[in-house]
Image: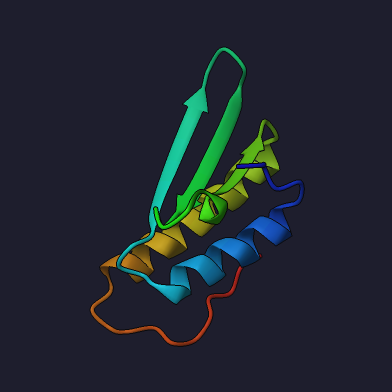
Amino acid sequence: MPYFQTWEEFARAAEKLYLTDPMKVRVVLKYRHCDGNLCIKVTDNAAVSDCLQYKTDQAQDVKKIEKLHGKLMRLMVSKETHSGSMETD
């Protein structure tokens, strides 16, 4: 389960994974205060290779993670089916 090096790659891969099967995807956020790192993990539990991870300690990346996490949560609780893609910054 390697970490993605760039935010754009991770956001695209997370969106693609979510849109393939929204009912199986889960998102985990973990903050380690001693390191100052925030890690986001998106997985569908189908295979280890489908586990996407991104780690950062930069404030601007934390805001991007927060924005993506909010979008995914809104899609997950929405009653509508979403066949189109999400926009990520």
